[in-house]
Length: 258
Image 1 (tube, rainbow, N blue to C red):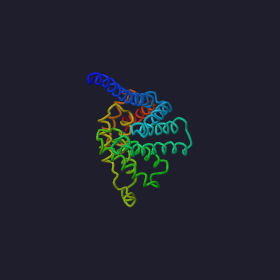
Image 2 (tube, rainbow, N blue to C red):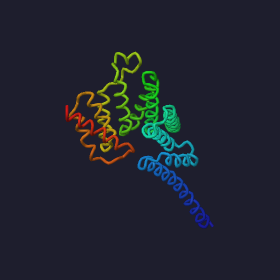
Image 3 (cartoon, rainbow, N blue to C red):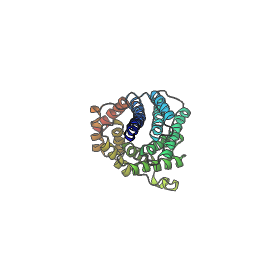
Image 4 (cartoon, rainbow, N blue to C red):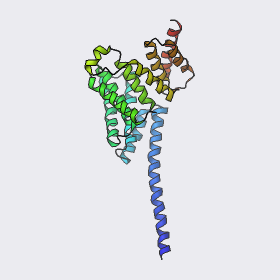
């Protein structure tokens, strides 16, 4: 009798394990599909459809939430560069991106990408409002990206965002910035983190282009040339890489003709 009961229990136990694995696989597949539309075909609307469906099945999942934030931020970039939308509309999308990044952090305070997405969204909102009139947002951006790096030093996006934050804020003299609490920004740190981002992801065109601009500002022409000269051999990874190539070509001509 005992053996008979055991035989009855084992299939049920295996069925429960199988069901649990199937649920995990379903979420994994949904995230993979969303990543495909977001990163490969740049169809952010389709990515959002999948992610909202996933959120219904897995409420408040941090991996879903930060990806929704990414989709809104990427959509905002399209609205800006392709659709020429109103600034209010673009800023609204970045605000949505920030809201979902904040929710992801609430669910998992140890998620580096969630903080990265908060930094990206907050930084863009600050740019639209004017960083010198949105000081608190600039500080929030710095805090978020520093936390992202604390959690994962191999996060190339966070290194890039940190580099851009330093480069952007340091455009004004430190004497002007210090009373505003922005004396921390400096170009040396910007260049260091641009290099780190490129070390982690050497085939990403935007990293190289923005880093080259920063090195040119510091009159480091050889390093800028080194970064830009590789770009023609790199494959496109974003919707705007052809535009970035053209900008890189223009910078190369400037360097060669200096």
